[in-house]
Length: 191
Image (cartoon, rainbow, N blue to C red; front, side, top):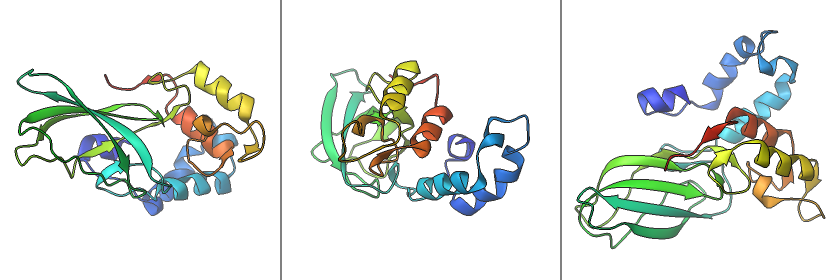
């Protein structure tokens, strides 16, 4: 996460796995979790790419883009299907500069400033949507945790499975989803 925020780059599985021993020191929250579970979560996270919305390899999903023009001429909302690899394109956009707010179900909203749409389209925008928003209120908090607890250890299509709390989109409400929620707990998405 810090590499993305500060350097605009993603951290791949090998680099993250090499950091696990330091994160498992006894005083840290990950000390009680088996290495195999952590490695599995890292492998799932590593399926994102560097262009588009970086999430997990999963079926295409719907994401809402709120485009706020820098000239304050009125917001534009576009809902598009984002490819499994996270790539998207917004076409037929008025030729302006925008701040774009991106929100998908299960994810906290992200904002990207100074997006140039002078060509009439938007592509190549990078945003990291953080998982953990089961109730779609743009916060990862106790309400989301309660949704996940209620559905914990359930698998789709069985009764009790909750797609909204399946943050890694693997068809089950499990430890991987809990770890994603914990990683973003008490955070708000951008407005």
